[in-house]
Length: 149
Image (cartoon, rainbow, N blue to C red):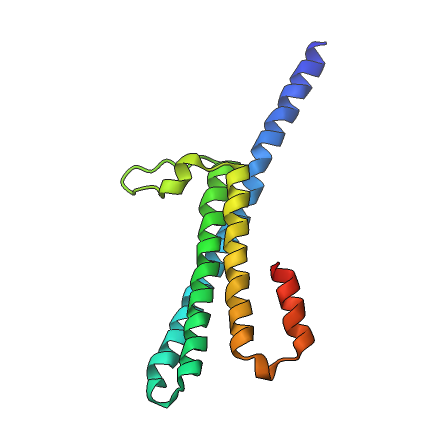
């Protein structure tokens, strides 16, 4: 009986420690965040440098692209901070101010926040498709609308 309790305790510790296997995944998302920052800077540079030669519609599409990058970046931040805080280890903020939403984050609120972010990202893509509708086939736009709904 004592041997089973000891094995059970060791097994429980291994299971709890396995949460740290997610830490490299969150680090990978931080790297992806850096890539999105780079992409944002490149797109902003193209917008600024070509400002005189763009039509209003082109500027709108480029700004929508910037908004899209920002929204995906926000999604990454929610997953990185919220996921790490919820599933790996509590983050203790000493000098930094924690995000307000982190105080009441749990798995179900993260799902809602992520789904709302995905709907926003989908809306941007759909809006870009409506702006460029003459370049797309109607079935593609219908498919995008169906996915969005």
